[in-house]
Amino acid sequence: MHRIQNYINGSFINPIQDNWIDNYCPANGEVYGQIPNSSKEDVENAYIAAKSAFPVWSQTTLEERSRILIKISELLEDNLQGFAEAESKDNGKPISLAISVDIPRAASNFRFFGNAITQFASESHESVGQQAVNYTLRQPIGVVGCISPWNLPLYLFTWKIAPAIAAGNCVVAKPSEVTPMTAYLLGEICNEAGLPKGVLNIVHGLGTTSGQAIVVHPDIKAISFTGGTATGIHIAKVTAPMFKKLSLELGGKNPNIIFADCDYKDMLDTTIRSSFANQGQICLCGSRIFVEASIYEMFKTDFVKKVKELKVGHPSESDTNIGALVSKPHLEKVMSYIDIAKEEKAAVLCGGNKVTVQGYENGYYLEPTVIEVSTDECRVNQEEIFGPVVTIMAFETEDNVLQMANKVKYGLSATLWTNNLKRTMRMSNQLQAGIIWVNTWMMRDLRTPFGGVKASGVGREGGFEALRFFTEAKNVCIKY
Ligand code: NDP
Image 1 (tube, helix red, strand yellow):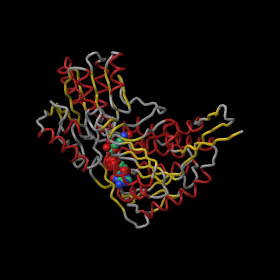
Image 2: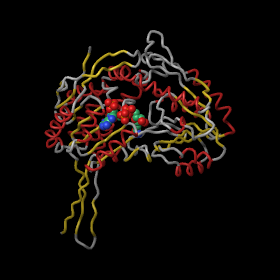
Image 3: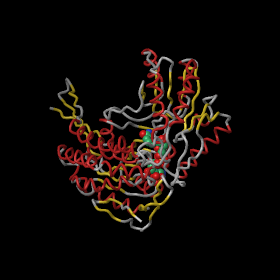
């Protein structure tokens, strides 16, 4: 059985206590490898390696850092197929998605921050009349922690690591225990690209042991975390007395608001994607669909028809639209919400059942599910399900839908379908979310701020926001 190892100080090593965790393939439910169940001693070793690498890396020229990051990006592109297959096998996502989205985006993350660091500038302020000038240094923090979830494994892992190392920090990182494989492969690429030893250290294991050890480490001064809101709350609590810098990208329950004046076909096609891409396991999925009453019945008919056409199948098949959910416990959690919907007397318009894929009977497959709700206040409309399950309901007025859209604890993204410019402006101003898409979904420009409000998190990633997070501002005031 294939065992992956921790990547510490440029080497691949076993966990000190020789403890291992089984790694399951979601497509067939079988164990196909083992990963280190790292302890806090492994995290300490990773920290020591990062600390030793910091003095040199933080003084490495921006051109050299940029060159290495871009080399990592190129090597990821060269190894696209292998990485995509590993991601699909580990996570259950369709191979087509890993090839077209996950791995290219991981490569873009390195390329983008490799370029961005050469353009990153700080401010200066002349104190007119006082014969003084202030300039602000943006210095790397030191050793930082990056912890990422399982839904977009390499995509989100590198979204943190790339800006952290571009800014001159050294990193102790932990991918999700459920999807460790591409993070493991990344270590090899980093060595090949010439990333100095210790700049990036990857520790595998459970959130509650190795993740927790990173979070509470007294000398890891900043934590960039993407994951569930409950874990984010825990991290915020334990790090508050340590005054750590925190970036928390957490859960979402995003509204997809459809007005009758939208481009209907474009909206319908995109809504299929925004509902079910990656089995609905994207924090940005529009899982609450609100449709203007005048087109509600038409939308309901057309949407359900299209959803029924989606093919649930083995992730390696090129025509699969919906692959396997990431794990058995997650499948059970998602299915429990279908039961809750029934208890709440909501109507399951399609889906709701486990799918048996021939030859892979123990895989974690679920039909894409559409639930018609009569009130926005029911649990399926309020709680993050994070699977191929959406709710739909009609609305009458702009005020009415705005109120419902904002009446959840989350505030990550919102999608708006309308051709009315004034309405677009009004609604975009008032929707409580960090990201608003109008007549599109998940269109990304890596320069833009990315993050949520309310229980969806604290801080922003992306562009210079990420470089600001991974640096400390220091003002120098010189009197002349
Ligand atoms: P979790 O919060 O369970 O886990 C995220 C990561 O944190 C994993 O690596 C996990 O390890 C680790 N972890 C768990 N407990 C601790 C702890 N006590 N200390 C330190 N690390 C810990 O989230 P999921 O992996 O289940 O991911 C799904 C969630 O992520 C959803 O809520 C989704 O909305 C959110 N998400 C948010 C995004 C955003 O940008 N806002 C983007 C993508 C997802 P382990 O896997 O071993 O438990």
